[in-house]
Amino acid sequence: MTSDVPLAAVSASLPCQGWETQAAWCLLHTGFDGGAHFLRTWAAWRADPQRPSMLHYVALATQARDWSGLQFEFANDPALQVLAQALYTQCIGLTAGQHRLCFEGGHVLLTLCIGPRLSVLRQQQFEADRLVIAPVTVADELWEEWSVKALVRCCRRGTRLAVRCGQPDVPQWLRQCGFELADHAAPTAPRHGVFNPRWELKTSREPWRHTRVAPQTCAVIGAGIAGASVAASLARRGWQVQVFDQAGDPAAGASALPVGLAAPHVSVDDCVLSRLSRTGVRLSLQQAEMLLKVGQDWAPSGVCEHCFDDSTAQPTPALWHNRAGWIKPAALACAWLNDPNIRFQGDVTVHGLRHEEGGWTLLDPAGHEIATFARVVLANATGALPLLQQAQASQPTLAWGLHQLPAVYGVRGQVSWAVHDAPELRPFPAGPVNGSGSLIPFVPFEGEQRWFVGASYQPMGKPEWPDDKNHGANVLRLDKLLPELSAALAPVFEAGVLQAWKGVRCVTADRLPMVGSVLQGDPSLWICAGMGSRGLSFAPLCAELLAAQWAGEPLPIEVALAQSLNARRQRVDASN
Ligand SMILES: Cc1cc2nc3c(=O)[nH]c(=O)nc-3n(C[C@H](O)[C@H](O)[C@H](O)COP(=O)(O)OP(=O)(O)OC[C@H]3O[C@@H](n4cnc5c(N)ncnc54)[C@H](O)[C@@H]3O)c2cc1C
Image 1 (cartoon, rainbow, N blue to C red):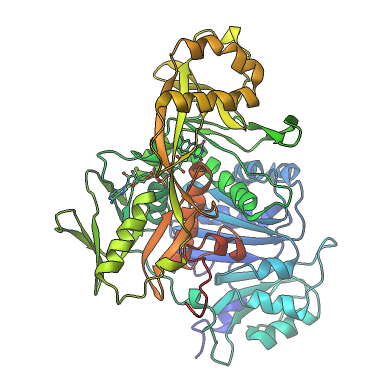
Image 2: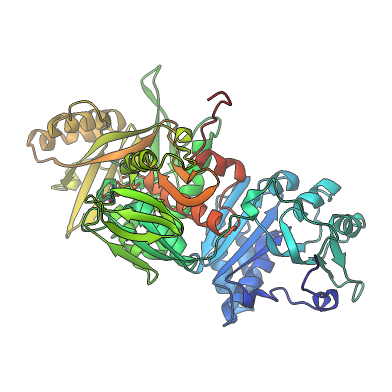
């Protein structure tokens, strides 16, 4: 097999040459170093009418730094300065790990991988169209043969290369790994090359290289924030998406929650949930900023978290989450669905799924066919498992992996809320507080300011609590969280003016959402559900993860973290 790119042509290639023929284009750069190369690539993408719809830029950085001061370096170039400002606004608070920064409505995605080169490269699962090996700075480790091999694992036959690094061993290792390198055009010029090994590439242990699929039509069942965000992520990549919901309007289930918090989970050992929630909140706030009206539908208010030490019953010092805020889920769901590639169809209950040659036929409760789609995503929360179990019972010969899904529960909850009567008389904090339940103190609705306290937690399967009992549980939470405010609100509680909003969360046994295909070896049926009490933190992350896997793009999170969200994550004993 040979590359279709002659080496002579490669040596003169431009940084973005070849992208005009592709719907998505991916560049891997080994030295972020403030992002100047990213900004130039982004500017070139903006200026090119033949640009690909999606630009992926994956950059490695050994350490997180405060890059914000660098925006002044672009003061002489107004076009770059605007982009630099957008970049550095998002660069705040980056720690070791993988971060997804989103620009141009989600069409330009920067995946910033911070940490030792070899370990971050081993967490990647994509094929770059272009690879740039940057000069090694004093902060970087020198290249080793293993890290060059890990870099080459992110290439496909035909990946173009520019080597700007002067380390003498690197060209030799690149050649050994299958790169053809042109001679230096000038001593200081980068060295160009193309990945064209003389051997057959063995990829049988990396099935993700073969499962990517070109955009076509698909169905999403459920128009809550999970389904709507999946639809938006796929639509952005060119899919024609039909979203079905049994209700007449979007966001009729748990996503009808009037307002909720997007705030990171914190743990002493920075557990998987904490790391995922941090990335998830960053993505959610980016989406809210792009799509919603600040102060009306969301606010990047920050959240104050009170931590309680149960052994002393005394609050420990509060944590301040700067990148956190409140969001109205229904507004976000509707904004996501407002895309020319998405069609929402309400009042359609999907009652059955029939596997066909070309995909899946959706059936209504009378057994009539609704439509057939090459791919289907179940984003209908607690409705997903019964639908899958029924489909399994009617088509038992398919390779179902339902036994590998985590256990799923419905958990009822109620938020208590009221209109502010005399806020000046009560010690309301300026912004949201969480820790023992949560308080969102000022949210505009229908021309008035409301406050919200929540949320009670009652597993299904037991008789449903009356509203008053739920209110009582929420008042107890507020007593613990903000005792002074709770005491000052006593007259309001006694006056019986508290209002209730109730819903059911879809919670998995390990409290992590599930995203993935439900059949073994057949990627046509997917699930994206189990958002639990954190849909506002997880929905966009899960949607981007699903879309990235369908397209074979860089993942928004490390592979190991993505595996913890995989729907079929339960190990199954060989004896089972
Ligand atoms: C009291 C309470 C407080 C909460 N507070 C917060 C918070 O502060 N922050 C936060 O992040 N999260 C919070 N949550 C959780 C959040 O609301 C959920 O995680 C999120 O809304 C789940 O979204 P979803 O799209 O997965 O599910 P849903 O919004 O429930 O959407 C599922 C959709 O599927 C549809 N459907 C079901 N079956 C079918 C079928 N067979 N055919 C067609 N359509 C079907 C339903 O009509 C529904 O619209 C709270 C939840 C509750 C109950």
